[in-house]
Length: 487
Image (cartoon, rainbow, N blue to C red; front, top):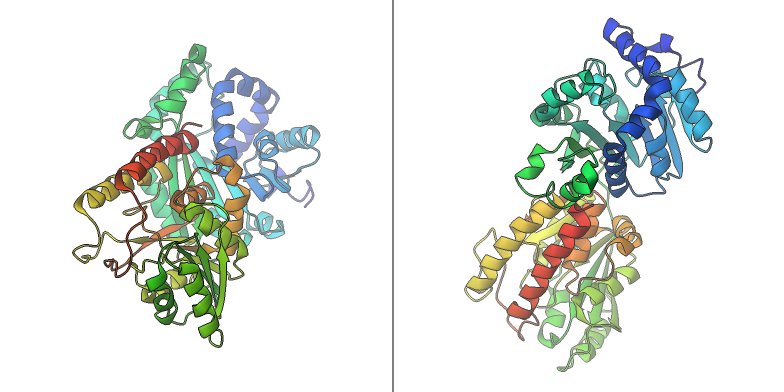
């Protein structure tokens, strides 16, 4: 696209849009000074955007300003669109390795000239100045794949009086008239435009340095339940429903097993057919009851009908076993089936279908919906699971009822993204559940839970210690709060 093609004359053409352009042109020479004057606010905003948007992707920034946010995101390809020719000229001069164009995103001709798709599309303080938010969002579908995330950043309407006062007092850059948009309004518009919200985050109780107090409050107090609803900044991550396309996929079922000899053959025998092909990987954990030898026997006995692999893990714990199995897996969909078979293998097609249909990108089983067999879960375990589910729902901003259910599924592509970003969390999780849950939350994946009928063991005993592992879960909560909220 050329600047001449996207001049101010290409605006959708009304008085309000012209006022927005005039304000942008008038503020362009002073914009850098205003940003410096409110450095704490912009630093926090950009820091959180870097958390939401991993570097190395294709990023479109709608209403890009001087391009500083786009630069900090370190995209493999970055395109910024803005109404103001003066601002775009500045952005090109300051960031020659990125791409900037003048244009009105509500002009269908502008959208038609953009070459997509993008991994992330940013609308930061942009929805407030759109004439028709629904129509503008609908036009973005052509730039999306099923994996594209739209990140909408805007300020809370609770702050409107204070922001107006700050503008009159010369503490805030003059703004054009904006849309009055509450969260419920935006969610409604997204629904009309065929976008699905994934999560909503809140930031900044004190958008000033305040002698270091602002940073402390924003890190440790602003994320807390109740207080976070009072924050200035809100970040909504959403995805296109139109780009979602059901597919026939292959599946890898990883079965971590330690002292589960009596369940090994039943896992294969009870596994129903689904997907274009299946691969079963037993990851054995140095058992004392002959589990490894039984895995080899079953592999040979069922070699004519099933693709079965048997490996022994070098490390310890289920988490290590899952990581080894997933690294080996060749299927499009990676799944975990606990070898105790308290989750029936017959339910796995539901997990596969949720991924293959595009309805979910990460599937977690929940044992706490349907009635369970009498000895399947002790009362104390049940209460603890409920409590931790509530806590982790808050931490990842998506609903969980049972974080400790061992059965999970996700695409191999998304698992690779989680593995690449694992350095952010580190090797912290012996269970394997939270490594995947936190990783899925960090990657902004759509998480869905599937209720299962939880049964009692028919062989062996649990490898979980309620009190030792309960203490580890409390440490996990503190860890997740620090890594997902205190940024």
